Length: 103
Image 1: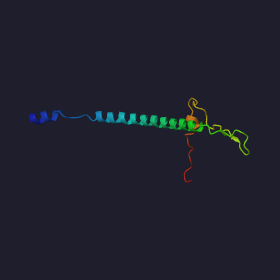
Image 2 (image 1 turned 90 degrees about the horizontal axis):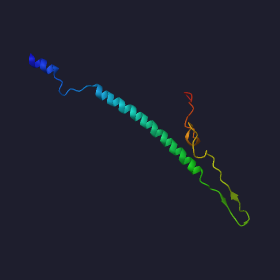
Image 3 (image 1 turned 90 degrees about the vertical axis):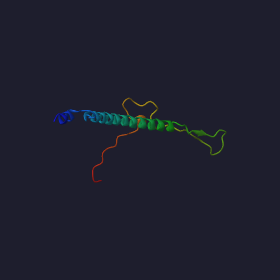
Image 4 (image 1 turned 180 degrees about the horizontal axis):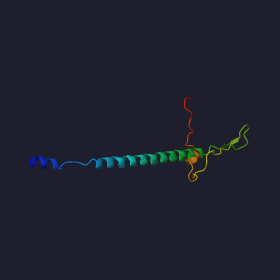
């Protein structure tokens, strides 16, 4: 009988379930936060890329008074670099309005 009681109280090799649950919870929450930050930075980089591509000057002019020659002045259409505080990057609208169901 003493052997049964001793085996029943033995905790060698036993694991607590609270440890793995806590570890999985912390890893899950951390990965969600990390993915949100990654998404925001990717959107920011795409916004910066769009401003950079839009600010490339494609203006041209033909000097010398050639008949039919002219000029073209390119004007950027996006906001200048330096996004407003709390605004979407490069003036991009990242929020989509909800659509009604069944349409």
